[in-house]
Image 1: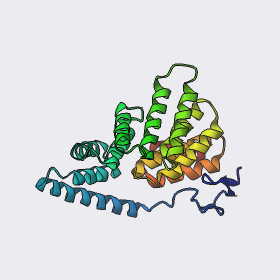
Image 2: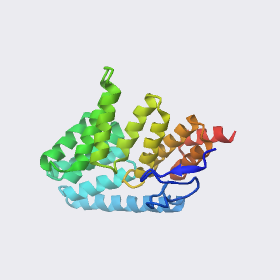
Image 3: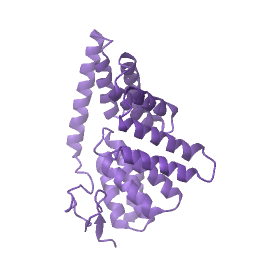
Length: 261
């Protein structure tokens, strides 16, 4: 049984059950909220959305209100509603890089990072601000995902990994750069590397504005990889975190039941 845990931030080694790295202070897994706290956050977002809807009835051309409403819907996991509002915001404020970035991000989560609209929004944001690294990172993320799905050459995996590594270098806090790289390593049957990238993705996911259910999917993926590596304690740790974030995550429920059988 593995008794140590490697920090995804600095590589320091600590006891498996430690919550933080003693070297850099990085949380090994997120300090997750209770179900009551998550429900309270959701209630706050729903009230915010209702207030913004009322504000937009008075002024339907308020681009900032459309953006904030799209952001609220995104955080609630209501991606279609978020998409509608973010598109209206971008139409009213075409020079707002943050608005374009969130539209690209919402599109990627909703439709997949290979979606052409992710690339289009990222390019538009870069045309406004060529130094906006998060948008450039999304551009690489989109191209890497496209290579995974559409490149039939023998170099598809290398091309994709190069793109995902470029995304990570530009935006080290982008969880999906790590996640997508992990998917490629899993396809290459390099499960140790896959676990490393998935673990980093899970830790980072709780620091962005994706909803808890989306974060739970990444934690469940880490747990699944650890099951494949025959590391049950590590697997149980991440699968439990997935269910803390989303008690309805069927994949985590199923894997935990197999571990406890």
